[in-house]
Image (tube, rainbow, N blue to C red; front, side, top):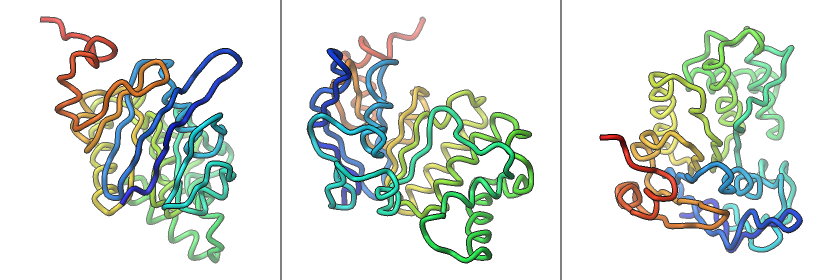
Length: 239
């Protein structure tokens, strides 16, 4: 089942066409990767999907419901979770308190909210950091707080915007394992990432965005060998 669908999405800023007739879908229990060079429109598309930006054309469907004109909080209540390229954490609060914020829409008791947040932290192996202030964390530790906060919101679809950016290879591999486990549990994942080896290893389907339009899409192995993708984005390895 397609949990998230974008169809014919277009967006302009003044005379600049940032997105042009972009369509993609994300199925339950799978990882769809969105890749492309800087400036391709990937984050704008994520913002359209999550309701931060309204498209000039096209539709956004979440769980079979048209949410093109709905608010971000309404989409969150319908099961859409999101992380961001830049860390969006609440300094002055603990890791646990930051994660508890993610379940505010569910009306849980304080005890149930705390238990849900602790479970999400354990899912990302950072339960031991629960009482630390977020500003005291290393970058790698802080990068795991956002997906834990997203998870406690009980999403059916997760948009992960460059979750591995800035992480050392070992930490990126650990994160990939956690993302794979989430999709195995039935979560629909839209992954925006520049780490191509991670994308090719983790994804079920890859969409390549270049100049605001879909260049091609398909299974990772097919996309990796597409000469147009090599020329526009992947390049050629040094021999």
